[in-house]
Image (cartoon, rainbow, N blue to C red; front, side):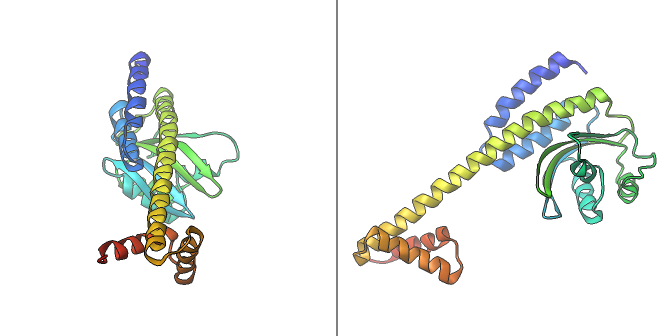
Length: 231
């Protein structure tokens, strides 16, 4: 591992990640960069487990989605093992998948069938029983040495920060869009029915509660209805 070159690539990656326009683009760039930057990596993906259900957030290369599906279906595997640890260890490394893996024998057998020879991964976050991980795969055993695993950890550190920023930006944009939609719908009700702003908001809220529809969706329906109506 040429650490100076890798550090330069990490700096470039950090800037690239911050330029992405959406959470999904950020995730896709992370997975693709892992394959590009980490020696011996044939495939990479980001796995999230939400309420016990495994979800592939992004993948680059074959074997990723099936590996994620297997871990979720079996409820075992290196990612699950890492997330359940009581210590602060955030990195796993499977040097040779052909060797016995007593902690998750069913997953190991299935992984060998997928052509996975070695594997490493980094826990990106944990929240109660949910977690996310960046996983790197190689077809040959012994691909991920300790140095390479460290490189994956450095990549994931950048990825976790960029992912947190992307999620925050996405949430802020969603909140602004929601506020704008509600404000526009209230304005239409106030203009057409002579309501006060409090009465207009009460109408939106009552419709939302009575029909169990999100307030933003109620506002959108009103905007569409009044926007198409003749003056």
